[in-house]
Length: 181
Image 1 (cartoon, rainbow, N blue to C red):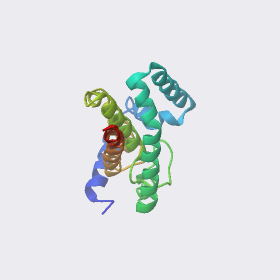
Image 2 (cartoon, rainbow, N blue to C red; image 1 turned 45 degrees about the vertical axis):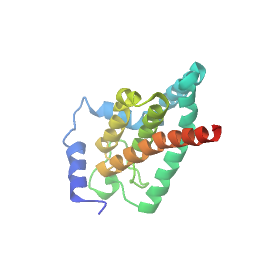
Image 3 (cartoon, rainbow, N blue to C red; image 1 turned 90 degrees about the vertical axis):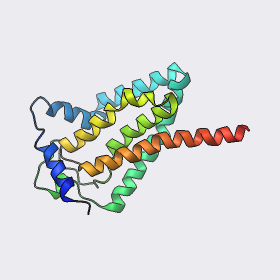
Image 4 (cartoon, rainbow, N blue to C red; image 1 turned 180 degrees about the vertical axis):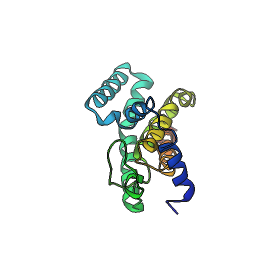
């Protein structure tokens, strides 16, 4: 079921069919930017700036920490429970960023970026999705492109992250709203 023919065909279409010298460094950047010291430092600076700005920017920054932690932990639990091998392990390919042996399903990268957009939508409104949709899209596609996830891993990650991001904030707002009355 998990390694359905369509999933594998879509994987190869992106992994091999999209391969281009100009696109590879872009996809590797989107896939692994936060694994680098510079990427983490940049993200920490941005987070600090959002805190400093105050208002909705501060609310967004403060919501990110628990939502991303919950999203990431859920993905890790599901990876262990499902036990699906990554394409760079299960298929005769070599991942562009090195072989990973942890579980494949769902993609935590895709889920975390969708959670970020979900939090933004809950804090600033749905218009935020129009400005930020490219982030989970590019990160998710990059994870397929570099050979470490199947398309269904990414699609479920997008769904899970979006639900966690938007749903967590909206649920908390609803609970707090009920306590005030």
